[in-house]
Length: 138
Image (tube, rainbow, N blue to C red; front, side, top):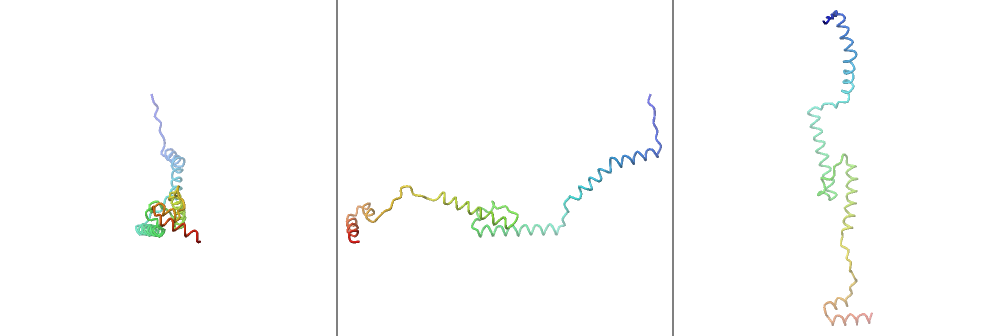
């Protein structure tokens, strides 16, 4: 058989107080500490100002990229400041210049042509003879 245990109201109040102090208070203190790091809720005006600032900065980035002649590559310029944008544009232009140089046309069988060779290709004997005679009297 089970024995019934009874507590006085004073004992119940004391156990309740101990439980609050040991279990609940640390949780409340920890929550209060964490709440200090919660970001501040913005008002509608502050949100509107932030939106306008973002639009203005995006417009400034767009104009800078366009001024550098890189508007086709505007999507690749994701920056936080105008200084960072200037650095990225400079680096991109350097890479683009290297790419242009590396991929430019370089003739492999280029040789100097003179007037005699030109007339020879055209099968113009008068021009060939004239060039030879002109070289004699230089």
